Structure formats: C-alpha cells, structure tokens
Amino acid sequence: MQKRIIDQVVSNKDQVQLSWLNLEQKALVEITSEDEAFPIENSFSDTEGAGWKAGKSGKQTIRIIFDEPQDIKLIRLKFCEKDQTRTQEFQLRWLPANNQAYREIVRQQFNFNQPDSITESEDYSVGLQNLKALELQINPDITNKESFATLAKFQIS
Image (cartoon, rainbow, N blue to C red; front, top):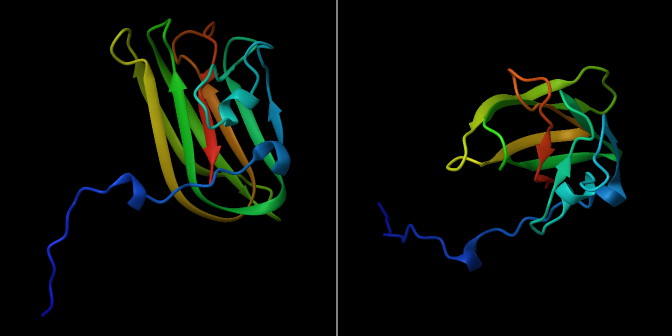
C-alpha cells in the first residue's frame, strides 16, 4: 500500500477559480418587479454592491432564460436583510431544453434576525445539463405580505 500525508489547508492558489456566466450576454431575464434604484443586473455582478430589490411587496419571481442551453455546475445565491426581522422562503427551479415542466432544485426557509443574522449565502453544486431556464421564486416574509424581496447575488457557473 502506498500512502502520503497531505496538508488539509487549501491555499488560495490551489482553489479552482470559478468562471461566472455573463448573463447580460447569454440570457433574457424576466422579473415580476424591480426598484429602479436596485436593478437585477446588480445581483449578477462579481463585486459587492446594493443588489436587486423588488419594486412591489410580496412574492417575486426572477426567471433567467438562456439564448442557448447551458451546462451548469454551480449556483450562488446571497440574500441580505439589514432592516427587518423576518422568515424568508425561496424556491429554485430549472427547465431542461425541449421540456415544458420546471424541476425543483431546492426550497428553503431561513430567518433574518437583526443584528446578528442579516445575510444568507448558499452555493449549490449542481450537474444540470441542457438547461434552458432557471427560476427563483422569493417569498420575502411568510407571515407579512408587505415585505419587499431583495437579492444580493445570483451567479451561475
């Protein structure tokens, strides 16, 4: 038997660099509403910024429809809420090319509690092939229909 002791600490140079899709060039984005000061493009950026905010309260949908089917390995979502304690739920679904029915990837609830828990970040390793569309449905507060949905990051690799 051959064996080797390895270091468990991974240095930055050993980490795989992700190549995020440029959604502005590869897809059409449909949204149910948008605050003009916080457009959806903000959430697709590599840099930290203001992100997207809904233009009306209640449940919201963000749908990314690709010009050409894509193979997707990773989906990154980041939600931030600095102003309000609430329980948010979201559902992420995908549509294979040449198919009419969306398939669920994940449905999740989490709590925002000021000042300690104001950010929720999720990376989903997926092996989605021949993907035509992604749909993110956000219920910003399961108990209050007057809350506004926000999204800091929506990145796809």
